[in-house]
Image: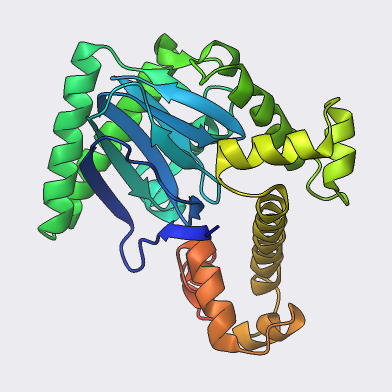
Amino acid sequence: MERTGFQRELRDREVDVECRGFGPSFNMDNTHYHDCFEVYFQISGDRNLLSGGRFHHLEPGSVLWIPKFDLHQSFQGQQDTGTRAVLYFREEYLRGVLQERAGELLALFAGPFQVMRLDVFQRRKALELLYELEQGSRAGQELYARFVFGQLVLLLEAWSRAGGALPQEAAPTMGPKYDRIASVLAYLKNHREERLRLEDVARAFFVTPAYLSRSFKACTGLSFVTYLNHLKVSYVLHCKMERAKELLLREGSVTQVSLELGYESLTHFERVFRQIAGLSPTEWRKSQRPGEDKIS
């Protein structure tokens, strides 16, 4: 059964660390996305991971930057077992900790350097900070957790600028078959506002629709139509919430904004907005205008 959607939501948390091992034949059974940013650390073993419209082969020391709402999925690598750690955080949390430096870190999620490689010393230091962050966060030591989080992301940003990041064309991949489908994924992302059909995309890549359909399903676990529909819905939803932010800074109430965007239920609008922005509409507007009281 094909499934796409949120694999994880931080809900009322702003940062989280997850560490887990994997055994033989462990594959995620669906392509999914998160309502937060993700930094994926390959600790031991290896994994194949689809992200950013590319297939990446991650080895020990590999770090992958995954933007929020990016469709991704991991697959078994060459080794049967291994361990990985994942750092999840909201944009508002990052900006609250780093303030004016936040933009530099966020640029890593949008730039050409989505994968970086840590040496032995960097790997050990990153794991120490991940452990401290996890312990501080779960123990409710908010100030300490923010301090450790700031240390970790600034170190990652510095290591990336110092040459640890791999250009997309230099990053290890899963082979020609997956690289071909990765090109199709990039094409779909760049043309997501257009009316796309399987036949037209197949023609653009000089293959038959049947071949593209089979290859796409084999590589991503999803049909061409399912993936394309999810990509379009995610994009439209993101644009809609950006429009909501513009209106929130001008309109008199959250209810008015909700109605203008076509939401019949205020609760539904607030839930969707929180999933994408990390704050309720009222909280987000207050964060943009400190000291001002707004009608909600």
